[in-house]
Amino acid sequence: MHIITEIKEFSKAKIRYLFKDDTCLTLYKGMYNGDGEIMEDKDYDSFLSEMIAYGKKRAMNLLVKKSYSRRALEKKLEDDGYDPIIILKIFEFLDSYHYLNDEALAESLIMNNKAVKSKAEIRFLLKKREISDEVAEKAMEEYYVKDEDDPEDQNPELKAVIRLLKKINMTPDKIAELDFKEKQKLAARFYRKGFKSDVISKALKLEIFE
Image 1 (cartoon, rainbow, N blue to C red):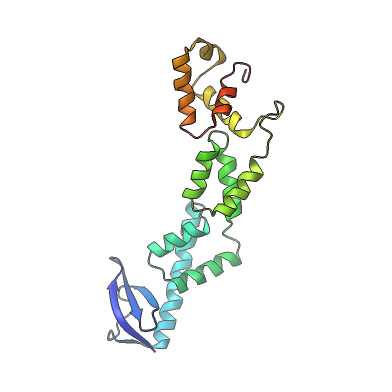
Image 2: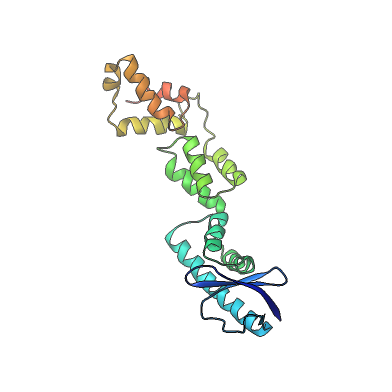
């Protein structure tokens, strides 16, 4: 049996039961109608299975709408009131079908953003999506291996600045007409985005993009 030591309202829809062995179980209101002191093993096991089933559906619904890293999904489930033992079972289910892949998510985020974002912006994006530092750096190394000094193979950051210049209609002729102060202001715009000063300088040279 599970001895209940405390009952807390987790949300408008859920109640959390804390047990003497320091474990807990969060249920939807109305699921358990016991006397508030003891939860029989058969009831606990039944409720646990039911909440695992709810958790699996919740996780799948989240993943259908958006790609999540393992940690980001874990935090989302925690915020929804799913207890550690339930989250463990949810991840076992997801892993059995290979629904979570932080490496693939990191690669996708880099590939979809490197054309218009600096390395610093992409690193921030990976961190925001809860990609681990190890996975993030490995992916960054893989997709930023170009030699920055090779004119035949411009590095991704340089290409990104050039694309952004074109996006704001900054042609070579228009840049040539800018005075020093205006060029500094334009350069600062990219510097604030995390692009390196040498990359910005190369991009502002008229012969770089034609």
